[in-house]
Length: 321
Image (cartoon, rainbow, N blue to C red; front, side, top):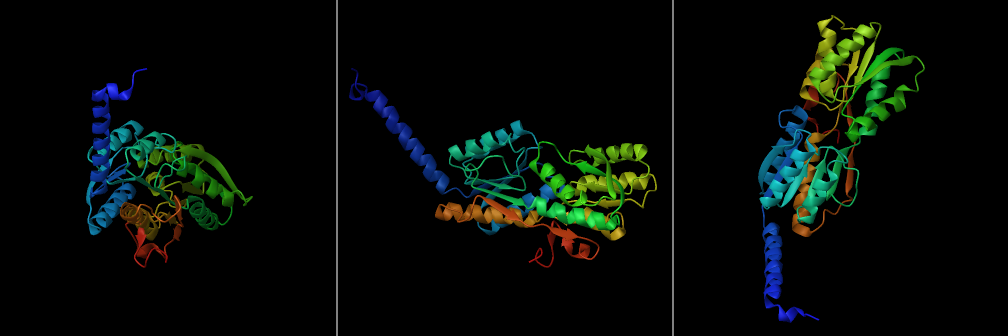
């Protein structure tokens, strides 16, 4: 039988590989780079996530790089590769799909780079260092109740939902209907996906209005779609239709104060991003976040009374604390 000591070159390769691995691990431990990846840097919600994460990381003494994957799982995978190659200490990620992102997060973990998910969770546990998400179900129930009350508990309405691949889209819709289906006077006459997009929501709302001119309300899975609906309603002079959104954007705040929307639901994106960086910092320093993997943050209903306090996906009086 051929034994290892008869192949000194093989033993040398194993030693070199072990030294390289040890050096890589050690260098990553001393890395001060946090890579922030969100679906878009132009979208107000995702842009504020990146801004908040970057600011908190710099306060804690880290360097940062910001990228967007544009909801493209292949681009996301390439950005993860790039973060690993740049010797990132940690990654803050708003991912490109609950199932499609598992492999990319696992790849980072295998390379020794912990991933801290914000806003959207993945459909696997034990891979991400943390999954910090809004309590979308709780928030949607708040929005659903506000919508029902603004509708005076009766009339026909339409629902605009987000991307079918996004867990949040389904959870918010379920939360809405947990409340709305309890009112026999409310009748959903249309349900369309507008993929979180304002222009698509504008078009879908126009189509819904043509088929259902008697409609009294539109409830949307995010503010971007709600604002598309508001624009479509305004284009045909329908200021009587109730619109409720979800996210807590500055544009939704302004629409509420001007009477174009009845309410939105604030999900604390700013605080989520900050908290993700704080957990990353703690894990890098101590080896553990000290928290369960999944962290839920409650949402806050925003009506005309709360709208003046809303700015950049947070409340000026402490985000409801």
